[in-house]
Length: 99
Image (tube, rainbow, N blue to C red; front, side, top):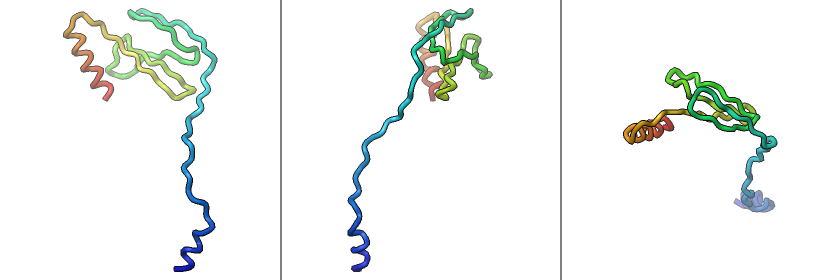
């Protein structure tokens, strides 16, 4: 019993470490314009790349904005909305797509 207590007597008490955050260095801000036959256009960072969505269920105006350096991908989908019912159906579809 005495050996057990004396073995821990010289150690410092455990203290919590401060919270750490990732340091992500983004490149200098510069943008390029994207436009094609679809009904939208946008500006995106020069370090990104617009690619067509190659999924078998993808529609012609679906794109992926790929950021290779950060191993990131932004999925862009486009649907034309003609009525309130279309809007409600697409909101439910977006919820299902996210899950």
